[in-house]
Amino acid sequence: MRIAVLCDIHGNLPALDAVLAEVDLHDVDAIVVGGDVVPGPFMAETADRLRALGDRARFVRGNGDREVVAAFDAGTPPETAGESRFARFTAWCAARLDRAQRDFLASFEPVVRLPVDDLGPVLFCHGSPRSDTEVITQITPPERLAPMLAGVEEPVVVCGHTHHQFVLEADGTRVVNAGAVGMPYQGAAAAFWLLLGPEIDLRRTDYDIDGTLELLRATGAPDIDDVMLHDSLVDPVTADAVARFFEDSASG
Image (cartoon, rainbow, N blue to C red; front, side):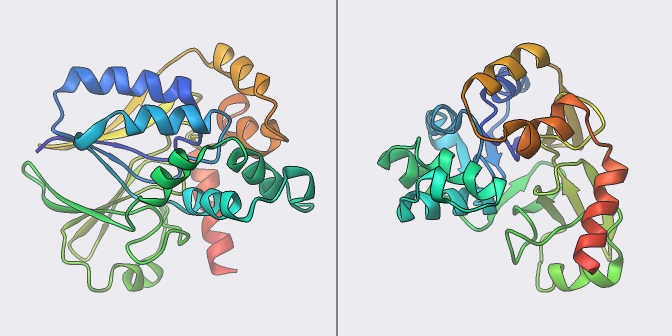
């Protein structure tokens, strides 16, 4: 098995299309989408594009996917979603899904397990194997990481959620972050993903950022620059900075 791993797309359809075009060149056996397909500007179109992948794709549930489904079910209008920019953004996204798209997001699995050529069994999760909100970064210390990996038998764990690529070794387990397709914290405006088998290949795909920013802003998504675009595609924050931020938040 060779597997392409796409995480944290966040409704950035141009980024997804660019990555899928590159994936098609690598003769993969499966695609694992590692959570947070949404929220994002083109969430309905992104859900439809991924659903069209059919049986060769497996889907891990991210906290963003779960929160959008909950917002859809609650039916809260964006203008009454509260003072949080993220709550308004999530409600706006949920209001643009239909029932079939909502049900597709709700069908995502907490974790996926698949074998990979030369790497053996791999566990795919979003935040950590036990939670879609826990953070693992490139500088997560062993004492914080160990409880998150307790009971995991696979030698490789692939996660997303913190939007930066890394390979972290811990007591015989390799933890790999695939990076973010649509909202990277990588110090560069591009799409980041992972190719597994026979090696761990952290990938970058360049695409038309200026044109994409114009398209994403034209959707009318509320607070889109503050919530999504500025730190990822306009003035990209570095992986080192975001890792430090997440670790400080986790330990605080």
